[in-house]
Length: 64
Image (cartoon, rainbow, N blue to C red; front, side):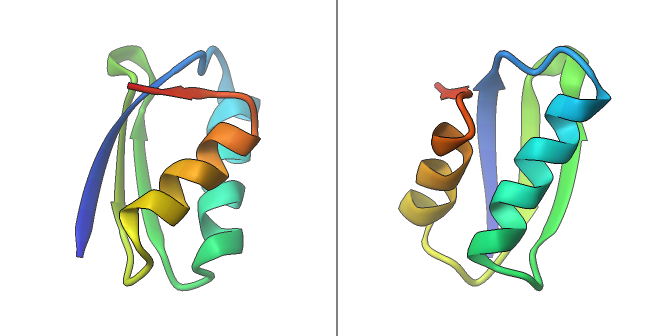
């Protein structure tokens, strides 16, 4: 299932890596595509949307 998030606070490649790793801790098989300039994160995953969102927020990013 594809999930799309608006993630605020990503300013660099390290931020992208942190978001990707947070998602993949929830679902190691997840595919993550990030467009930092648009605050856009697409996740292809079988995990629940709420779990993915919580993982991103635990890294310190705001999910709109």
